[in-house]
Length: 426
Image (tube, rainbow, N blue to C red; front, side, top):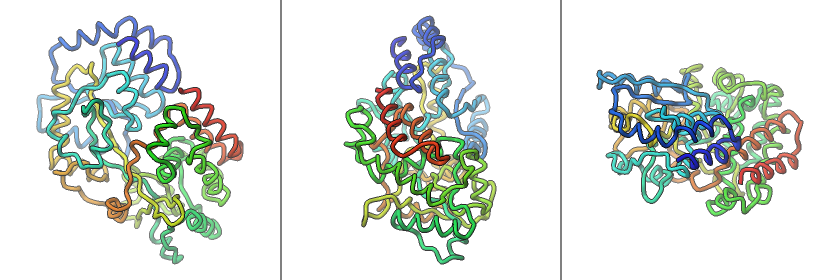
């Protein structure tokens, strides 16, 4: 276990080897994990997530419902920053015998934990067979084992202000050029076309991901992940110049890199901008600011000529149980409760999310993405198996797009930086 987690920290958690963490692993990992397995379970369940604020109400209500149904149980939720320290903190706790019983998987990416065999097998849980086909295809598995619970499905696209579009007679764009024309139209009217929390780089990588899903293939993704193909030589190379064109068209506020994610959501919700490229997970923040706002969503039209723009599907709020969890039985009970039809339906309503389970009702579909959800059967594609950038590449993508927005980097420089990050992470 010592070598496995040390490898995890060095290679998969942002590319930084932390001496203190590695020393802790060497000193206590094997003994702590064996001791925890023999320790009797308690009635305290610990959960770590990176989702809080407006979007975190789904967890708050879920935990309250579980504690009401199980009054002898005390659920402790801890919210950590969803940055490159998140996995490092979790790995350290797993090594020291203080692992949470359940944790929300950063970016829904199980690869680091799969490589280190740190996830509990959930294959026999009753909800596994009830997962919709999309989730079964998306689920990260090893040798046929299900190692996580996916409670919702996220769909990416462009939120837009319906009233602003209708006032100008603007129709939903089907091509990238049409999308750029709409951006220019709003800019000419003195309205900032797009909200983006450019200060928080993950919002920009969300845009990159949505553009990626229309250009890449699973085969190409495998080569990019392995390092056998450079990003600058793959179809994904078209994303950066297209984003530069969006910046040049006036798509964003000149100060967008100084605006954080919550502020950008408020700007869109309150009509200060016309659109926002995001996933369905952004809706709670939008609704918190504008409960009755007239919003809808369309697929980001970045696709080959003549090909309808697809909607990206991905797992969301993915949950896992560490192999060093102190209360694995109670953790499984919590996930089973979460997946029960009535509880899951309420969770989906709170999360404004699409269902991941066949036996669950859909919850209350918000009008903001009802039109998009209707397209999923015919125009939805899965992100899993496509490009899953390493932390190093993700950081280069984010920094590069921020550089394009402030004019401190060129397309060529950004592509070179992404290639360098890919080489450093492999």
